[in-house]
Amino acid sequence: MVSQLRDVYDLLVVGGGPAGAAAALRAAQRDARTLLIDKQPSPRTGADIEWLGPAGLKLCQECGLSLKKAGATEFRDLRLLSWDLRRSAAVSERDLRGWLVERAAFEEALLREAQRAGAETLRGLEVCDIRLGEQHALLRLSDRREVIGQVVVIADGAASPVGRRANLVVAAQQPTVAQAAYAQCQTTAPAVGIDVALGASRAGQVATIVRRGTAVGVRLIARTPEQPIDRLFGSFCAGAARCGLLPEEIARQPVRYLCPAGVALDMDTHVGKRCLLVGDAGGFVAAFSGEGIYPAMQSGWIAAETALRALRAPLLQDELATFGVAWRQRLADYLRMPNTDLSLLVPLVFGNQQMSRRVARAFLLGQPF
Image (cartoon, rainbow, N blue to C red; front, side, top):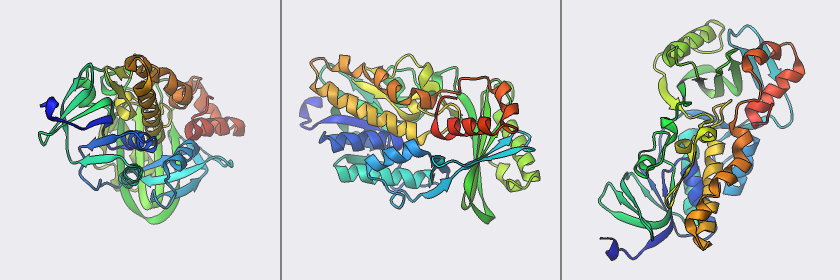
């Protein structure tokens, strides 16, 4: 029974990905009593390669994450490719740099920093129910435990079962959610870098090839529902294999999923009663690049700051409502598509150096075009 529980946390965080870990870390840094519940067992496993640009590196510094702690590989510059892979433009500028990371290892490193800061964690447990009351929030866990807190930060993925139980409309329910596919394999030729293939489509389709040592991964994001993502992915990878950009076997078993790229901008609210929706659950993924680690972390960071202000405010719910303004001020430009028609832009990229620089900066830095 709730009456038997003595411990009331300031912040309950559901999900141990970049958004949840960053929220727990920030709250613990501010001396808030914080509990993070993660359904993934410890340690997280997986070798998917992702990247962070300069904005992500700056936030990692605030989190206490160095290149070594994150197990990252530094990269500089990137190469733009036409969708048919016949044209390319290498773009080199001082601030076009970042880290390549194994997603699972990076998340573990961020979780360790949250624990060092004082956040408590429960791993390998699911949230089976959420009750949002006038005085507190109560979570029932898969081991039949109950925990209570003042505010809940929900960061349990695009489908967000906990967000739905909290009566929020989550990212995966939005009509603008994109299709995506990812595959990875090993090569015999070590390399480090990012290639970006741009589709000359009004709806927008982008494929990113990431190389980190002998590992190569390709991610394709498309907003063309008339063509299944697996067919589009297979066709692209086959063309890349013929050009020698990818190994032939990479397209055999892609992981298909819904990618909430830019969806945060289309959502009516990320605020529920005593709860905030962040990370993939809130659609915090860059629309153009599909990069999700930095916007997830930043959304969690902002949510923790908002929650702690709310705990000191006369009306908690009114202060939680300011989350929408706070995240838009810091993230809106990074999340949105370039403010131009890509179907007209792409043909100009490969014959105009200034245009290729602008596209590269929009992709890697999240700058308005």
